[in-house]
Image 1 (cartoon, rainbow, N blue to C red):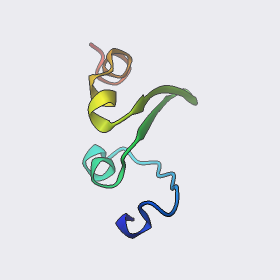
Image 2: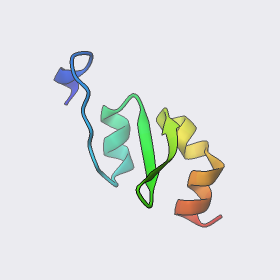
Image 3: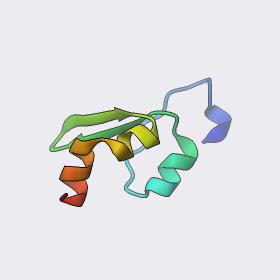
Image 4: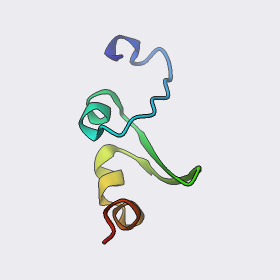
Length: 57
């Protein structure tokens, strides 16, 4: 994946956040088919909506 960086856009559907963090600059989180949050991994992990929906807090 890293050899494509800067040349192509790629959409990967994955639940392994460690893997996604290793390959993605920008992460989009979906909930029920709609965009819930988008940004860097740090931004998405700190997003209150993501925390509420996926961690139940």
